[in-house]
Length: 220
Image (cartoon, rainbow, N blue to C red; front, top):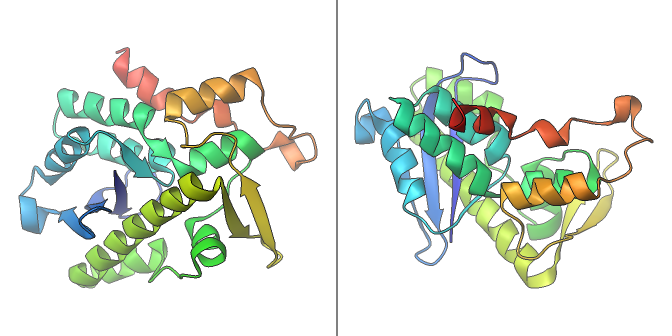
């Protein structure tokens, strides 16, 4: 089992990938893909590395990481690879959203469940990259990938994860499926039995649509 994380230039539709990291839990090591290490086709190389794994764990990989990788992919074949990976990834955040109807953060889960903090955040990583501190951003990306796999392993062992709420209290998410579902299975379960989100203003995010972009690419 490996985990994947990306750092990019931002959150808008023009964002570019700066670095993609894969963390191998068995080896306890990470490999990162950036233009400085794998050349201008590094996004394609990162997607090939992900596709070579039996399972890849992400945190928001379906709706963000793979989506950005697809937009930055060197060709249509690589775009389709990103889309297939989005539909098969074991995405912690997607599974959480399918169970609860809302989102949370990697930092909130890592702090409450593992007692660990992220080493930076996305906005700071953008500033660091622009300032030429590429090694620091890569280290941050690798650490996030490591936290992601640690959370997945914990969920598989104990069937739950803890998180810090916005009010600073601990809350327990009892995972409905262990091991966590791949995207397609998680969304099928969500469609069959969606959580009650009537209490949320506006009814919460459109969880069912999170993978639509991937389906669109694969049916082009």
